Amino acid sequence: MSVDADGLDRGEALADLSLLAPVARQREQRCALGVCDGSGFLIDEQTNTASDCRCRGARIAGARTRSLAGRIPRRYQGVSFDRPPVSDLARSAPDQVASVRRYVTNIDENLERGRGLWILGDVGTGKTTLAMLVSKAALQAGRSVAIYSLPRLLNLLREAIDSQRGLLDLLDRLTEVDLLHLDDLGAENRTDWVLEQLYSIVNARYEAERAIVATSNLMPDKLSELLGPRTVSRLMEMCGDLIPLYGEDRRREFRPA
Image 1 (tube, one colour):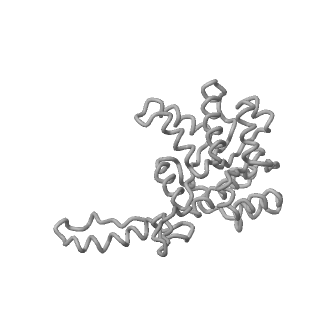
Image 2 (cartoon, helix red, strand yellow):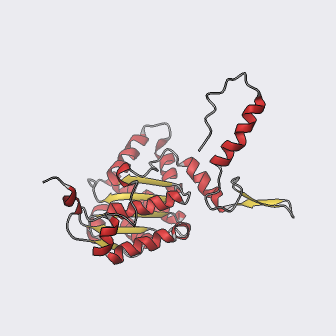
Image 3 (cartoon, helix red, strand yellow):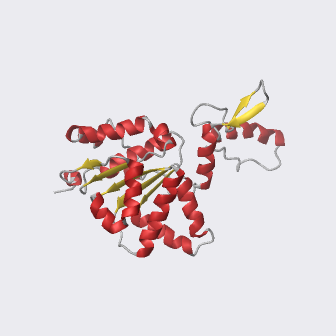
C-alpha cells in the first residue's frame, strides 16, 4: 500500500518527503514470501553479489497484469473453509472440498509447477465458490491472479483488437499472470474465433507452465465438442483429475419463497 503524499505542500522541505519514501517502499515492496528485504533480490554480503528472490518474478508479472481482473468479487470475498457454504459442502462432498484444501495448502508449489484445478458439476453446486478459495489463497500468497468468466474474457479480447494495447499484448499478460481463473467454460457460442483465442490462451499457459483453475457444467467429452479437443486435452493435463460436484442447486436454499 503506497503512502499518499498529495496533501503535502510542494514548498515543504525535501527532507520531509524523504522520510515518507522509505515507509512507502516498505509497504509497497514487502516480500510476499518473507525471504528478501522487499527489494526482490537476495544480497550476499560476503561475496557482494545479488540474486533474484522468488518474489521478483511474481512482482514483475503483477506489474504487467495489474489491469486484469485480479480482485475477488464481492460475493466471494468472505469465502472460507470454516464457514457456510463451504463448511456445509464439506459434509455433503468431503472428498471434493479436501482436494481443494490440499491444493490451497500447497498453493506456492502448485503455482510454481503450473499445476491447476478443474471443478466440474451442475449449476449451483458450489464450483465457483471452491474456485474462489483457490484464487483468494493465491492473492494472499502475493501471486498475480486474473479472474474471468469465459464470456467476459472473450468480450475483453474482442475489445482489445481495436485498442492501442492490441490483442497480442493482452494475450501476453494473460499468459504471464501466476493464476488464471476461468469460470463457466462452455458458456459461450462456438465460433472459429472463440476456439482460436481460447486455445491460444490455454496453450500459451501450458507451454509457460502457468496454472489455470477452471469450472464448467459440462463433461470433458461435451466440452471437447464445444471448445475443441486440443484445448480440453491441454486443460486436463494441466489440471489433473477432475473434481466432480453434483446434486441440488444450493442457491435455491437462499431464494425467497
